[in-house]
Amino acid sequence: MPEHSSASNKRALICALAAVGLWSTMATAFKWALEFSTPMALITLAATVSWCFFGIRVAVAGSFKSVSTMSNGLILRCLLLGLINPAFYYWILFTAYELLPAQDAMAINYTWGLTLPLVASMFSRKLPAKSEAGLALLSYLGILVIATNGNLASFQFDQPTGVALALFSTVIWGLSWVVNSRVVDANGIDPEIALFLNFSAALPLLWVITGLAGQLPSVSMGSLLGGLYIGLFEMGIAFVLWMNALRLTDNPLRISSLIFLAPPLSLVLIGTVLKESIAGSTMIGLVIILIGLAGQQLLDRAK
Image 1 (cartoon, helix red, strand yellow):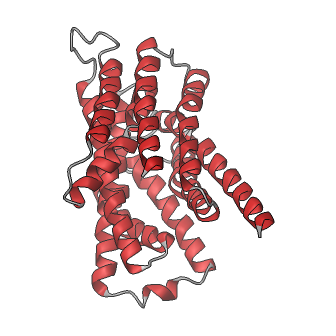
Image 2 (cartoon, rainbow, N blue to C red):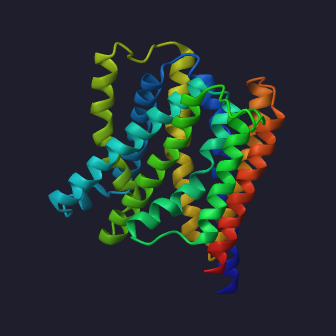
């Protein structure tokens, strides 16, 4: 039994590190792909790839038949949640990346780890603990450092719209995660089936909006590669790897702490691939944000 547990934990670690490795490339991938696509065209193409990915996985697993056992109301909830995430969430996120340097958008986006418990507390109708609220405020201070380029006294933002959208995306993500998790857990749904239904609802809406806006994805190599990479690895494979890691491990908190490796790796890729000069204010702000996230991990461990 111990040997099996050790092997399982080793597989969990490999899956988690692979997922973190993929996620660390995403800030670079988003910014690079947006050189060839509009945010709406990019999410439309990426969502199409991801829908195909999950459709194939569900079909190969023979899980489509389980959809027939779901109530119409449950299917409708899964479909409606797809309008929030991926459709609305990624449109907001990609627009933020279009407006901001990749390093800033990435750092702000990582505050989702603190936004999530705040959103969850709203659903449980309980105020967040003072320690949770304090850690959130600390991380938001890190956002201010980034947004003002370290000049807090001036309180002037170089790109207030981009900062607001990046921050708002964490709220949308937290909202979709909490609601989706409740639906999946309460009804015992396979998360991949729930995701397939999410994308099934988002896809036609995205194509219609993109077409009406005259922003259909171009057939350029950059546009196609960006949509393929993001749809396959950000929305698809990384999620499957992470879910497998959490399923295989006997210590989910230890696995979840590996996410702290992603921001530093992301900065290295942003600097080397995108050739962005990493600002000192970004480094300081990111460290403050990560301290807040680490504090949240310690609180979760103590519960």
